[in-house]
Image 1 (cartoon, helix red, strand yellow):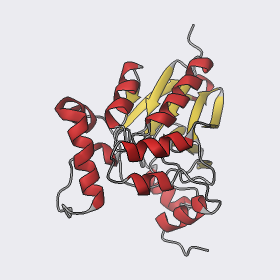
Image 2 (spheres, rainbow, N blue to C red):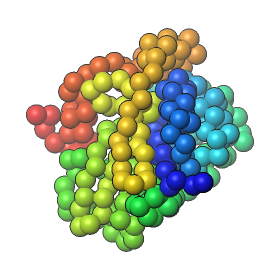
Image 3 (cartoon, rainbow, N blue to C red):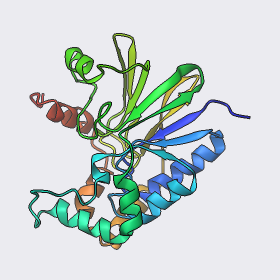
Length: 245
């Protein structure tokens, strides 16, 4: 019987080790649906990550990193560009086309919450940002035209739960590259309310695996898997263009 539980996971960034732990937890929780909030595959194990979620019948929205080869004007020698080419080679044409063709938003039914809009950055965008520091006036602009009372986003890799003008905006966090103080996989469970969750996994195995895979950005990517008490605030303030402290 359906129980109205919907898991929203985002920003896995090819961290198949973190994803495996979250999927195991979802099995125990008996969720009805998995919704993926973008930036799924661009990371050390892109094919394995995407395939695992597709096999589960997950619904997806597109993140900016899911436009893997959308590199117009980029410096071809830049590390992030080389990493995208590396990811694209492993994904192949069918998976790249699947990611590129994903919608920017999906709407799901989640228990007593009713209709919930899931997006990557902000409604209708895979690049606009919302953080827990975004001013209310700016947030109102980003939510203009939204009919649902709950919006779940990702993109900025820090969980939060805030409300403006009756619309509840939740960042489900990042499974694979969180900007949180402590390493874990961060996500959200929707149903009879919103539960911001974290799942522990073998972070050291993920770090070793990223390097063993030959991922060109392994050093940068794994830096977010180390503890950093100030990281969430520091990066959120940077995104919002605020002084660091």
